[in-house]
Amino acid sequence: MERPVATAPEHEQAAPAVATPSPRPHRIVRHRPPVRAWLQPVVIALIVVAAFVTCYVGLQRNPQPHQIPIAVTGSALPGEIGQALGDTVEVHPAASAQAARDAVQHHDVDAAVVGGGPHRLRLEIAGAAGTSTTAAVKTLVGAYAHGAHKHVTIEDTVPLSHFDARGLAGFYMAFGVTLAGFVLGSNVLGLAGLLRLRHRFRVLGGASVAIGALAAIIAGPVMGSVPAPVAPLIVTLAFLAAAASFTTKLLGTYFGPLGIPVATLLLLTVGNATSGATIGPDLLPGTARAVSALLPPGAAVRAVSDLSYFGGAHAVVPVLTLVAWTAGAGLLLGLHARLARRRSAAAPALSAPA
Image (cartoon, rainbow, N blue to C red; front, top):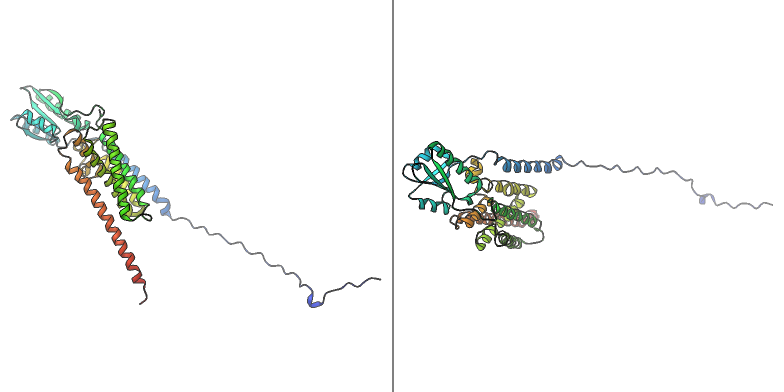
């Protein structure tokens, strides 16, 4: 006999399963980055390389002398040389051969032409004024002497250091200090959220002194390539590092990401290319000649050369130029911080309910 199978009441029976549709996958929307994000780094890199090549290669392409200062002795000789060479030289009449030599040794002029008889001339040059400048002077005076049927003897009254035969040690030292200051300023830009402005100023100032001292000791007493007195050289290079670091921080603060490329162009490209070391200032084109002494690298190269070979006779103005760059950048940074504090203090008052 079969046992009946127990069944659940009708109201307790399971409801038939209903197929639920599977959730549709979410569509991932990918936003294409703006064109500016692609173009900006490429354009900046192209501008930097174009400016670098144009400055360093273009300025050496066809240097032309322009009013190179030379002292000339005698009564008729200054006028003859001035008329023959035109505006390529700036003739300074000298009362005697000793006065002409003193002018060269104090860097009041780049060379001196002394009459040595009816058919002889003596050209006194300052090798420390730079190989490009002295080469131009030799060519110009030689051309005049050839036309006047005179024989020229050459004497270097201010020769370069034995360990700086090409006269480029000061330029490379200034370039290295400028680069170190640029790197210092770039890194301190990232400390805005960690250090107060006065503490960042202390970092910039202290590190600039250390950079200047290290560069001066290596190039001076250690290697003997830069024969300037150590203490004035340290001061000059410290202000160069400070000018570069404070200016880099200033440009980065005011212009944001574009500030670093602008500092690169201003200091490392235009500033170093027109500094007057590889191409003498009197052989630069007009625009480059105008900015040469105003930018920190050019001012530093002049000061280092003057301290090394000419007794510091004309070093004050270049050093003051470096001081002005440092102080000006520091003042503008302080102004920017003050304006930022005023804006942040005014923001809550403007957002408060009436």
